[in-house]
Image (tube, rainbow, N blue to C red; front, side, top):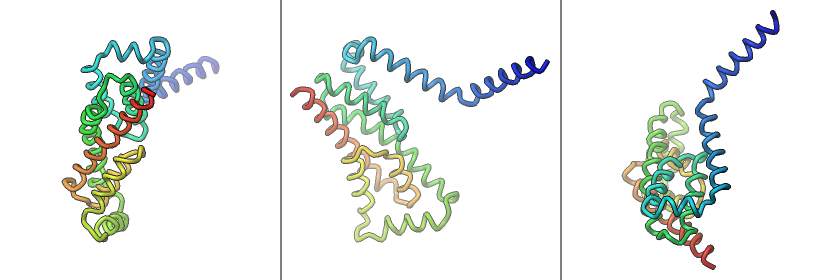
Length: 197
């Protein structure tokens, strides 16, 4: 009797676990299957099958999905794989990926704005002071451009901080967009030059 009850409890616990973590498990299976596909078929054949037009579309989609620090690795891997073929223009890769990245990171900016009441007035006031008590009102946009253009660090934290600090959206979206174009273009260019040596 006890064995049957334990078995039933184990199945219930397994069912609850699968129900609770089904998204993570599905994503892990997808990544594992993709890794096997890349190993068996090879990235060159996959990129050749997708083609140039499909490649730019795939870059746009992965840039849109890879907005978080946890998912940006797949985006950078996609850019490196496509740039290494020599079939894709680095500037076009940057111009394709940058708007999608900016749209994705905008979510974190507005999350920061709407999180202000939850975070607490002192934290928001300190961030606001840091943003606005600089010699120029362009300190935050300049920092946003430099951060997005020349570091591979996650942009979601930057956008969250800018939103929490109360920086106007119109003042940061263009520097972030230009920073993304700069970074992706430079990354694609250096990958292309590295593989052509």
